[in-house]
Length: 198
Length: 198
Image 1 (tube, rainbow over the protein chains, first blue to last red):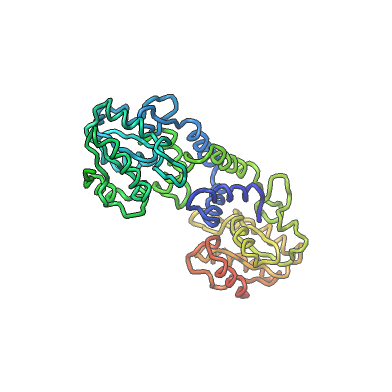
Image 2 (cartoon, rainbow over the protein chains, first blue to last red):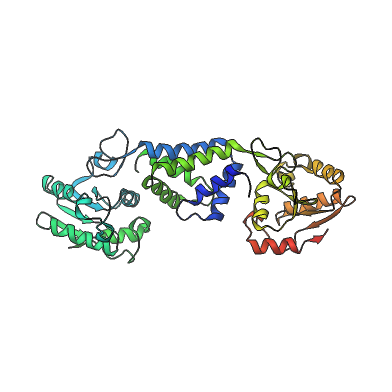
């Protein structure tokens, strides 16, 4: 079925999420038709992303290698006492795209999932509690996926933080079972604006 | 909006056909989450495809660099007197995936399009006529897109080949306006089986 290098490229594309064999073939043939520079651009961007992306020392959001703090933590206009807790760095990107949070973030690095062996000590929860106490955080919004694990994580964290600050969760504007980083802007904005005290 | 290397990767993905900003962001975040080896695999496959893919000296189908003939032309079980004419090398891949042609191919390198400056001498039409004459080809199937340009090209070529051999076109099983290389296997098989004399 065609030369090996073409088949290899189709297989590599088909490993990406949501890309089936037919789409992968279409992408590979497109790459072959286009100038070499375009293939090099994507190849270079792939390597650069893996090499140059690091995490913020404060919130664990994505950051360019060599920068200790991410763009949000560096931004003096952001309210450091208004903290939004998310599971993954990709969730920060979703919230920032929607521009609905005026404070800063705290990335947990996942959600509690005892059956997968993910316990509180595997997430950045202790660092969160310390940060809330030290920085005198005024409010924490738990912006977690609307799933059993997300709910359990929100419940666990709210128990830890309740003595220290106001804790809220996203409004049930998120369709149940949906992933936060795939939500549309309006749904996400509603969920954020309608957050309720836990 | 996040570190530069991430934004660059999103932009590079979004240049691919059918990949919008949201999908590109999802793909980029997936790459960041996965091991470095996976990003290197895709990056390497992109470069290798551009470096190692060449064209068959007989039919201009894709071939691995260094191989003069493609897999189809090398295959002694294929009928060299039964010729399928396609516009692009990618069309060969579509037909081979469906395994509906027992003969060999001739890739034109495009279709006639006077308004875009693509004239008969810009396509491999003279080589086709020569090949049909020299190899005593028994039948030529013109498997071109079902578009104004595809039809005009089929008409032009059939005028050239009619004195030499039997010429047929694909049955109108292809939805009008559709691209050959995006057709499903059944549609393509019907169109091929129902080819009619021109």
